Image 1 (cartoon, rainbow, N blue to C red):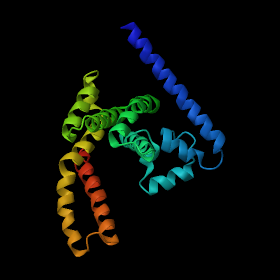
Image 2 (cartoon, helix red, strand yellow):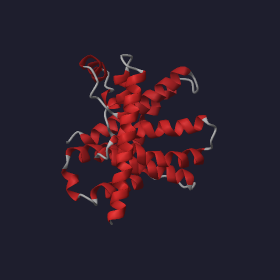
Image 3 (cartoon, rainbow, N blue to C red):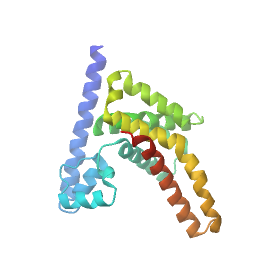
Image 4 (cartoon, rainbow, N blue to C red):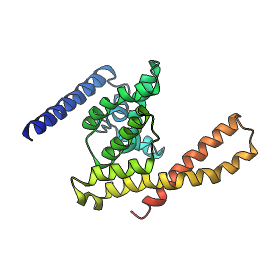
Length: 219
């Protein structure tokens, strides 16, 4: 109804004002000292990013950290959770306190397809933690699919939709298989050693990257 629409519009306007406030504070506190990088990391705002800095991130393969995306949203949500952990809250309280901030973060970053997908999946993961239930990645992926497509079914033909949902589906279906195969390499190292931890982390990163690329390659 009109009241609900007005409340939603007001909330979004408040979140945008908060975004502008955060941006202005960052610019005033860090002017000339990396504020463009901080704006990208916190808000996904690349407007102030110089070509030189952008090329550095591009060549390192980490430019996605400075753009509004599902990955960026997930990293911000994880950061929120970690902040509450630093306050010595238990995981259920960390998840509960993080949930309201997810809506603010969603409206601040802009509800793109990938951000909506990440918001739904992260919300369900936090709710599962609060309710002490198992979080099924495929069920969360399906719920996000419905939330994104029900208001606008033609989104299924957009490149952003295909890339975002295909990448996550690939991770959910294939990453564990690749990781299991990769763990055979760990036999040559001693469990718990530095080389074991480094190799294990490298296997995880490669498995996630390959699994995502396998399903997004056709697009």
